[in-house]
Amino acid sequence: ATLGGWVADGSLWPELAVTARRALLGFALALAAGSLLGVLAGLSMGPAMLARPLVTVMLGMPPVAWLVLARRWFGAGAGTPVFTVF
Image 1 (cartoon, helix red, strand yellow):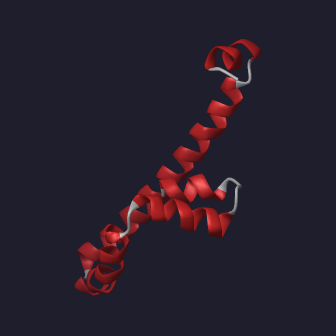
Image 2 (image 1 turned 45 degrees about the horizontal axis):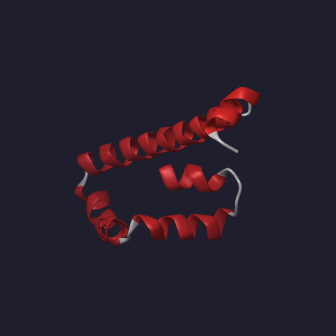
């Protein structure tokens, strides 16, 4: 299975479309959640102070740890790549 073979038999493009759809869904969810939380944090210090410890923990985790957790929580389905991009 080479890239040329996938292009020749037409199996590359549907898989690429699925991957792009999952990545865009994760990005859209992150954009919506981040925008909402950013507005809330900008309007009041309460939400910002509540979120600070969680954000600190999340930023301290290596990216590969998120992959392992996502795989454990969502299995091999579509949820893993969406969560990982999110």
